[in-house]
Length: 286
Image 1 (cartoon, rainbow, N blue to C red):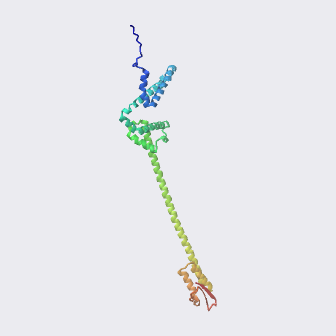
Image 2: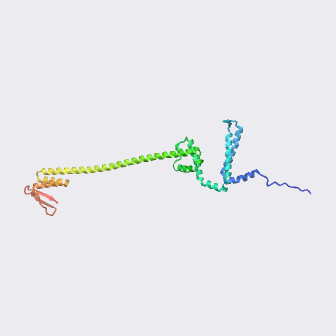
Image 3: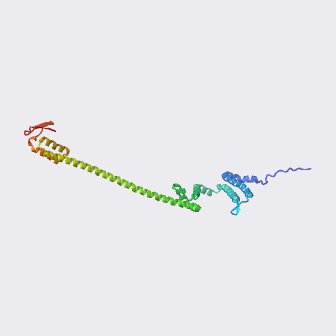
C-alpha cells in the first residue's frame, strides 16, 4: 500500500523579516522618533554609496562621498542602538530615576551646548552670552557637572560669569553716580529753600524797616508843622504806619505843645472838642 506524504511548511523555520520585526517592535514602541531618525540616516547611505561608486572625485586624499557615507551609517547605527537601550530603561530603576531627576539638567546642558556653539559662530560676541536667571541656572548646574562640560562650553560659562560681573560693576558705578547726583540735587533744593526763606525774611525785614522809616519821617514832619490839625494828622498817620514808642512819642509831643486840646471823651464813640486858642473843632473818633 502506497502512502503519499504531503510536505507541510515548517512553522519553526527562521524568517529574517519576522525576526527583525519582533526585534524592532519594542524599540518602535519605546522610541519611535529615534527609530525613524535611524531609518532616514540609513536610507541616506544608499545615495551616498551610489555617489561613491559613480563620482571619482577625491577631496584631501579621500573619496568625496566617503565621509557622508560613514556619517550616515555610524549616526544611524548609534541612533538605533540608543533606541534599543531605551527599551531597557524600565528594567533599570536607578538609571531611570537618575534620568528623570536630571531631565532639567539635560535640557539645560543641551541649551548650553547650542548657545556655546552660537557664541563661537558669532565670533564670541558678548551679546550671545548668558545673563540673568539663565546664567544663574547654568552656573549652578555647571558647579555640579563640571566634568561634563567641554572646553568651549566651559569658556562660554566663564565668559558669561565675567561679563555678568562687569555688568554688575558698571551698574554699581551707575547707581553710585545716581546717588551722588540725587544727593547733590537734594542739597541744592535744601539750599534753595534756605535761601528763599532768608530772602523772604529779609524782604519782610526790609518792608518793616521801610515802614518804620516812613513812620519816623511822618512823625518828624508832624513835629515840624505849626498848624495843630496837620501836625495831629501826620502824627496819627505815623502811629497807624507803625505803632511804636517812637510814633506814640511823636503824637504825645504834638499834643503836649497845645495842652488845651487834651481831654477825656465820654463814652459814645464820636465827640468834638474845641480849642480856645485856635477856635477850631477837632473831631476824634474812638
